[in-house]
Length: 94
Image (cartoon, rainbow, N blue to C red):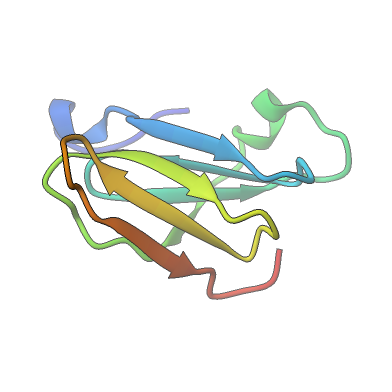
């Protein structure tokens, strides 16, 4: 998958797969990408599709992302001591 942008800002810094295996998240320093898997298709095939962009407010050094246990939202955070954890409710159903 090619991620457009300037070199440093397009590098993927984090990713997660939902507990049920049907959703994939990846992020760089400026964007969150989302894919929904069809059945048991391989992850590599899922990621060949165009991702949907999800809400994200840029953090100082945002390098972590994870789904909530129910897959209805996700968390992001930065490196460092006392970094806040941000919650985002997905704008659609999984």
